[in-house]
Figure 1 (cartoon, rainbow, N blue to C red):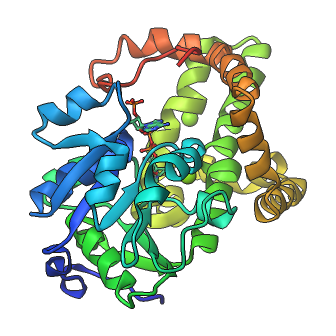
Figure 2: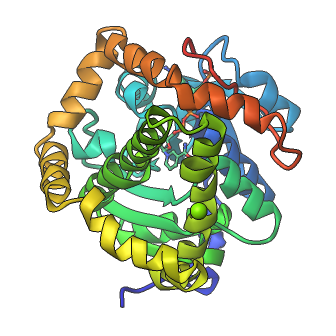
Length: 341
Ligand code: NDP
Ligand code: MG
Ligand code: MG
């Protein structure tokens, strides 16, 4: 069993004489800066001029500065703008203000792993990556709990990078839940693989094919929605609580038998070969290059894929059905069906 770090293994005092700049105030940025502030850390938020997030951060009582100014005055800089913009923000607003002994932090290894950012050798480079969406990271912190996190050290000229990463993880509640040490390479490659093959790509495609198979066979779209999308959450909750075994214990014997005989027919061995090909593209940088090339060309492939997927019939069926659910509330900064985000 790998080592897990908890509150007692991390010392917030490591940050007591440090100025921290959190660059970006989105999903992760708002959670980190508010929770660090509540943990007694001296934090400022760095945002570009005219940023939409500025008013929100100021309403929460945080100090907001231009990115360059926040980076210049900070000892520890956490970069939490979207991965595809980090290299540009780093080159123009952060790199010119780095000095020896500064600490550069990330919540995902993408830009370091694929070489889009190459920090100077006299700067510590580390990662604190909560394993959950930013809004859950903040909600759990406020509830006195935390979301598990990964830490990693890429460069350590000070010899203190791991202590700083652990202290930062404690400041956002991570060590309440448990922190595991990894490397930038392992975090980046497994994170991309998980989201592409299973969590996002795999699960979304499975749901869409299931919905298409039922509706093309003449079943009602509303029934298909419940069977292949809505119930997925209930099944996944059981998996998280007690693994596949608890899930199979809770479902009927009919469902369990069907799981064993039909699961491998649907997800046949070729699917595993496809997964290996996806992993190979992640490992050799093919995926990263495709994503960043498209971003640098105005993200037209991305926009087209988003538009195509948002117009899948399961989305309009779900939109209408969910209006009837009293227990589902809309996230504040989430808008459904907006291809032109
Ligand atoms: P968001 O998309 O939520 O970040 C949005 C923030 O970045 C906003 O404050 C936005 O400002 C600002 N921003 C966008 N572009 C620029 C720019 N060019 N210059 C300056 N500021 C900019 O990011 P996430 O929180 O999703 O991701 C941040 C990092 O955390 C990434 O590395 C990601 O991989 C990682 N991560 C994210 C998770 C998540 O839950 N989303 C989970 C774990 C890791 P404005 O309001 O003006 O647009
Ligand atoms: Mg990810
Ligand atoms: Mg059923």
